[in-house]
Length: 270
Image (cartoon, rainbow, N blue to C red):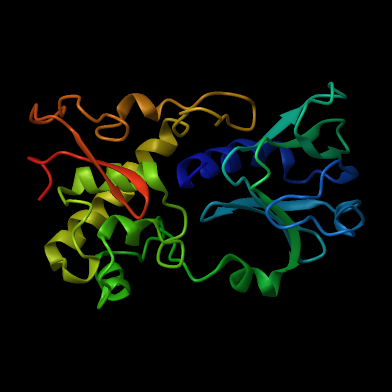
């Protein structure tokens, strides 16, 4: 599933091409996503001008000139690709949006776990949920500790809980905890202030480095111009079970946390 760095990469890449453009045509070939696309979606989007494009958690948020927001969540295998002209219709191209400059934005999703809807600006927070923004300037150790206080769930599950933090998934939860030197099964509610400080610092460093690399391409992910990410070459623990730790040489171990494969170094993480 595309996580925060991948969604941010797509948003930053597409914004210069889409902001200021007016939607001329909308074709919905398949409505049956995780949440069915509304019947009036095409009518609501057609004729609107995009005034901004950003990321909130794992969701793309396009601001429209009628003070509504067009939301796109890529789910597990979704892609947003900007194409010139009228290319061939590919399998799993579910939504195609044409713009006044002749280009088109194509939403392709093999597994159809994505989400696409238009909401009033005032409904944005309620639609996206209460998760904290990991890259918000004001988010630090104290805010993380306060959100985790009294929680018995493992810290890795805490980082991945979209009601706690919006945007972090399995790849980056593993990498953040390695950089912070914290084992993934530690109870979030029992971590010390200095450990939350390391997590807060590592979270920003890992996510920003991944964005600089265009995200991680494990299988399906491409950016808005079909380019691969490269951060997978810098993974320290994710999917490296049995390989030596780059920092200490100990073998990376794996276990399950919340039903998800989890990777850690038994020497570097305590």
